[in-house]
Image (cartoon, rainbow, N blue to C red):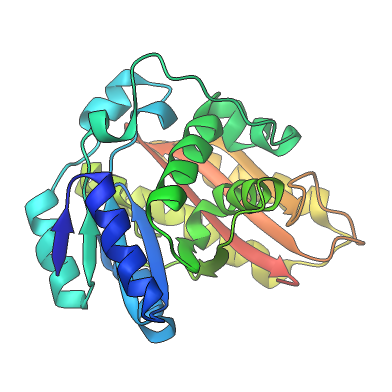
Length: 280
């Protein structure tokens, strides 16, 4: 695996490979890698000649400086995992490689930015689009792989790709789960043993709602889900939404895709999860 920390050399190297007809798959991460990330690498390997992973803890997508500070940084361990997974290129830049002083960015991605995650993390998706746009310009990939766990992020990056006519195909990859059902996340390292038990209510509730789902009982299911999660000690529900998979507005029987999405604080750790209920 080749490792680059500066943008020009990695860009040139990948352009040379592309010129020889090699296809490039790209996985953008913030590190603290787990099996969920590695599943993206594996799919990218199946579908491309060259797989590139970036590790960059992006400051512009954190609206809480404490959250940025405590985000796990495990570059050495991550490099070993990537090497073992057969990744070809690692791009691990510092902040000064990605941002100039006083840089401004605003992309009008519409109301989806302000729903659900956007309501609880204002400005978050501006930071996400800013860094992903930069990464897409540095890494000339034909395909980029993102996890379904960040469902809203996938919608927003798709909108950006469409708006800016970027020459990359986005691939959504399934959520990887721990044995009890907890969605894999870099933030899970912050959970105590008790927190981990309590956190199972999130995937448990999503599965329960999926089993009972019909498009004409959305309001009752949302209420039931909120009651189940609120009854769990140590869990503070932020939202449980049954949404149209394209707009994230409340789903209707006419919605082509319907997704249940949840966010909650478990102890001091904020977790998100989702499940597709219909379509998709």
